[in-house]
Amino acid sequence: MQLVAVSYDATEVLARFAQRRGIEFELLSDPGSATIKAYGILNEAATGKTAGIPHPMTFLVGPDGLIKARLGHEGYQTRHTVQQLIEAAKQSVKPSPP
Image (tube, rainbow, N blue to C red; front, side):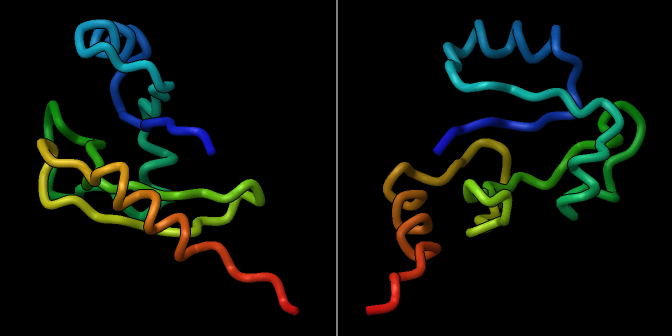
C-alpha cells in the first residue's frame, strides 16, 4: 500500500508544508478540485479563498483501483490512527474461497 494526500493547494505550497511538517509521503495537487469532486468530498459551503476545499476523508484504494474503505474525519486536526487504518484494510480484504 502507498499513502498519498490530495489537496487543492499548488505543488509549491504542498512542498513547503511537507518540509515544515516533516511529511514523507506524497502530497498531490488538485488545483481545480477535479479529483476532490470525483470522490464526492467537495465542501460546497467553502467559498472565496477556501473554494475547492474537501471534507477531510481517508480512502483505502486497492491495487485494482477500487475504494476498499472510506473513513471520515470530524475536522482537519484529527486523523485516524495507524491501527484504525490497519483494521479498515483487514476488513476490506475478502477471504479466498476454500
